[in-house]
Amino acid sequence: MTLLDECIEALGEDAEILMNSEKEKVLDALESSFPFAEWGRIDWDKVSKKENVNTVDDIIAYLENCYQNFDPVVYIIWDEGTLPIIKSDLKKVLEVIDDVTAVSFDTWIFSPTSGYVIEIYHEGEVWVGIR
Image (tube, rainbow, N blue to C red; front, side, top):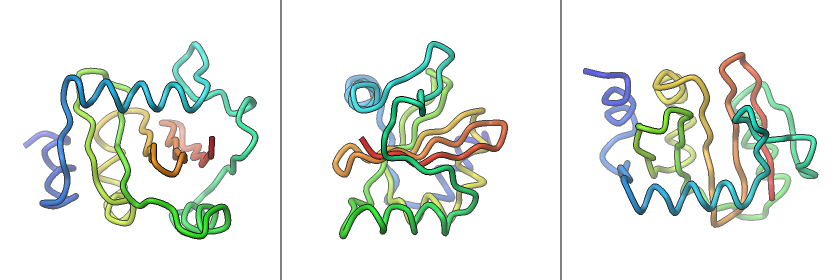
């Protein structure tokens, strides 16, 4: 079983795997919502609403502070382009975050509906931003 398989299993039966055109739509939405630096990370200096966080509770607290109701439907995007994008629920993703981040070096958890992103960088930095 691959790390991706383990992640999908941990997310449960509600996780949806996106490939091809569906995957491209989500990537386009992420790239049009947030500025990326040439080295592949979000350019956080160009994001006005953002927070550097340390825990899952910090992520939820920041989102709850910014939104009365935020959309819990998110897309998991990894830096490895051959991997699919996974549609899931934010609460479930955060419950199994170790399985999610084990799949590849850098991970983005993106809600195009609410306009937030969580970037988990492989060196341990975690940012939450709102477009």
